[in-house]
Length: 256
Image (cartoon, rainbow, N blue to C red; front, side):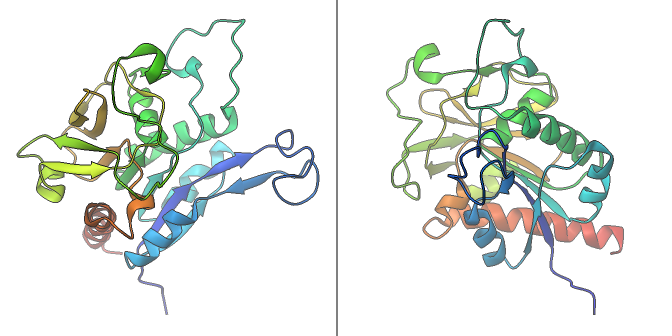
């Protein structure tokens, strides 16, 4: 009997042999890994769907990866290399990046957009969407902007840090209300908005917190981490339910 659960693909971290050269992360020295946040696994399962983990694969396999799922989540993680959104300075060194993940997820997102798969983009994922659409980022909020909000709050991740005001009469505010209380675990933010995107929510200091694709209601990008708030926040549940509902509708239309 064919499994009828909606399958939600989730991206994760790539741990290189260099990063794990001493075997401190897992396994033996030099062993490579793909790692996924279990918060996403639990949130998807609690939303009556099935998580499908998306490891980095060569470009020629990405279409088949996407054909095996009904919805996609681009998860948070490392900074995206600045070379994808600004002219790189040759003498600059970047520590918290993964070029392997950047290259894979950029191609994954481009193909998913073309295939009209419902997509939820979280934190890094939101920034990646902006970059794919030729937008740019503030590389560090504290050094580039003035704000009293601590956007990089690493403790009590399930608890809200600040409010986000949402655009009225938009599908996001229809789903979540005009204001949501969110956690905040990022040090970068959107600078120039990419093409065909719309700013739907901002923090009180003007930092962009929600963007969507114009004329599409099956793509939502948020700067916070709803997967970490799932157990205690109604709006987090609504976001995951929205994704599953969009995937279910898509699947019905396609006759699967």
